[in-house]
Length: 189
Image (cartoon, rainbow, N blue to C red; front, side, top):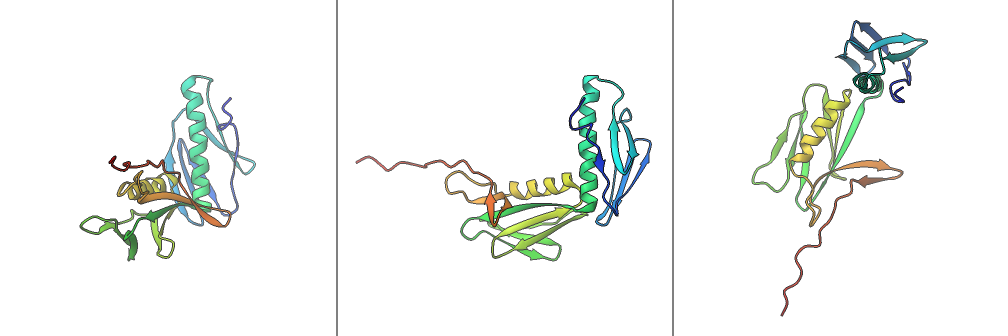
């Protein structure tokens, strides 16, 4: 049995789950998410927990079992707490400024780049630490928006300039590791 799939998902207080066929709607303090799952997966509520069962030990059903459970857990966590992704801007002259709901990025191009967040996503800028925070209730959407922002100027291997993922570890920000290259050696005389 799938180790991920067989684990029940606790439903926190203040979160309601509605199951209609293979469509699940999760409502919580942060918002509402709805998703349709594979019809062969059996989703039910038992003792305040969401439980996912599969019809057989077929390879496809095993894969769907773990996936369905993980997506449901992300929906419950999203409406209860939300998700965040942090990005750090590194480089001389590189910066970000808020402009209403959007942000303006100055990344060494001849023009500033304006990033408009889609519905359900908020962008915040910490100018002192040069950190952009992408937050929302849909984990997939938060990750997609963060990846699109990072793709505007990915970190380069020589000086490390660009936009990189970062996270709070203990009492400081920890950046994603960037593989650095040595660069050109000095000219032989």
